[in-house]
Image (tube, rainbow over all chains, first blue to last red):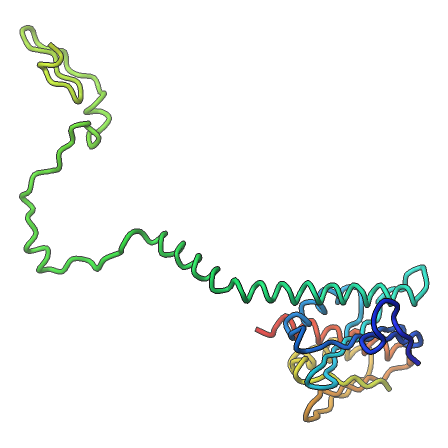
Length: 178
Length: 70
């Protein structure tokens, strides 16, 4: 003997007070299997969950609370059915958002990983390239002294001997100092 | 005796086997192959105990099926 669940259509939900359980019939085209699994999993700690497949178009979820509340069983089953319906809707929506954003998430992740690898990672030079390379070229210019070591730039200088001009600071010529 | 009919599309066979092993100390459990379902027959000392073991077994099988679905 089953009773209707208040606030839910009788063709969707029914409670069995003798068995202390409530059953929901779910449209498989609206709520996919992943959403059904996710919603069911959320109830495993507080209810016994049984899934059925009465037809290819529908799933059936039977919930029985593990512990009885102090109040009426009917109220507890009604609450359980409502919470499952809410959880199903939330799970289905999360699945949809995930599917819609999957390409975007993959694209952003790929760019982040590619960026971490550094700009345009090229193949190492071949022996012919190394052979043709001009190693006699002068070092690059460093007018600001960026490539100088700290000791070269700021270290103690040997005192100038009598009659010598003091050494010029970085970026400064002896003519500027004078 | 309490009979559980777990649909093959929803429950993994390995999960049902594992759940049956977990609850074997608490009741006599018989597994039967069916083209569309895993049928589990639970027999114990009292009907209430059979219901309890059957429900716990179904929960265990469902949890494992969801966790291991890949």
